[in-house]
Length: 445
Image (cartoon, rainbow, N blue to C red; front, side):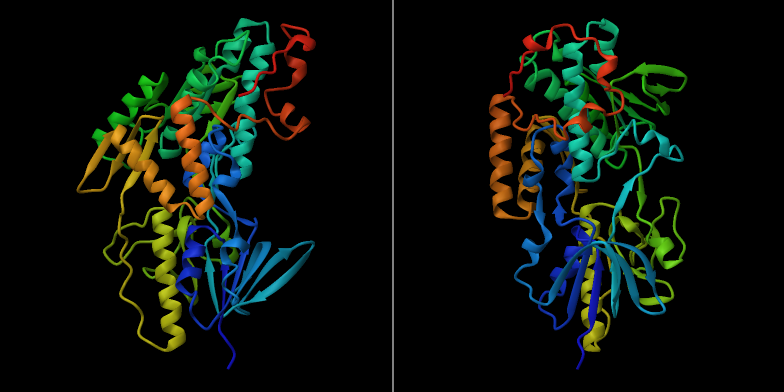
């Protein structure tokens, strides 16, 4: 008897949860992903801010699934789905292949969105991939290097101004750790500038940062950011991003680095399927994650717009993707075995957490809320626990401990050669060196 084939597009939290649920089933599983690694996205901002290296928060997909002989991994990019013929088309290497399926799970995630201003992306990169994180790290560190070489005080001030747009968890965490990088880790590494004079600006269009958290925790987060020296602008909207910096309302604020954390746009899964999507491009799915009219096609994670059996909206966070993936796996198992469907899906909120620098965090578990230093230690323990791979956990724990005791960052590397030097806003011809290159300080720690 021919085995059922389950094709899973995307090896993030949701996709791997489906694999885990089907790990002991007599099925053929094909996992397709554009990249060869699974990424622990909640710690991505720490790569962007030079705390961790990419290898500490990512692991090759093949390594994760090597013990499952019925799982085939394909590194490729899907560009269409034929629901009538039950196949997906993907570019594998230099050629396109049609991969047949009996069950299809789309867990393709999301990218940052600019609300119709896509031309801002070159000036204000978002943070979703390792490439994004290393590019942002390059921009931040390059700004300090260029400021060290500049002799125009206004240009130095601009280069030492970093604007983060968006006050959700990513924006808050990014702003806090950048402030610590500038005011502590790099404070003694330059000779002609004072990194402690770095201006970090966080702009949130809503009335408070961390809007998904209880108000008391939002207030605590804003206070913690201000203690770190971050300028928090709430109820303020960025109306333009340009080579000078950002515009809030009609006020131009010079900034050498802009980081976008204000919105997300789902993958084009809805257009692949030819079905309805919400404003963020997420596929509108039924309560059990299947697509209306396509009983064997499921969409989970950031790609799905879903309401559970209690009428509760499932948020686009890791725990939502993991729970959704596990439920889809159970459904597929039940169908293959000819058994009744599992109980209707109910999302369980395991809590929301966000960190603000080294000593502060906020955590909301519904019945229990915590903030400050204890929340920071709890946040660290939770994230280390959920990291995939024993080596990753040990490496991250040692890096955090070293950083906590010394205030230093271990990954202050500018990579990419000439590409890094030509990043927007950092053309070398625009900067006049204050010293001959022969006496440029090259300290690194």
